[in-house]
Image 1 (cartoon, rainbow, N blue to C red):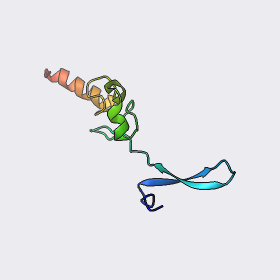
Image 2 (cartoon, helix red, strand yellow; image 1 turned 45 degrees about the horizontal axis):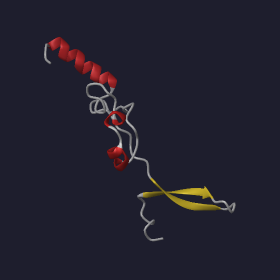
Image 3 (cartoon, rainbow, N blue to C red; image 1 turned 60 degrees about the vertical axis):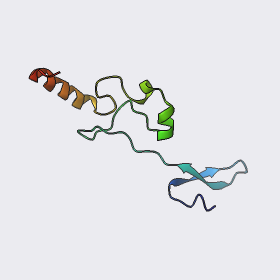
Length: 89
């Protein structure tokens, strides 16, 4: 199949009902969301295609806290503390 020759689809060996193994083509996983400051993996952010992310509720896309989905909790805490100490809001 010419449409599946592209490497945008990954190749997976799958056992079919007849008992033989055959090559199947599946979508690749997207990279995980990372923190904007330290580059650490963000918890609470799903690893799905942008098409599926578009149809999800806003509360399912990222954590409900300041900088949720952008910064990890450690960096967010560090920024909040520094803002409180400097008197900025």
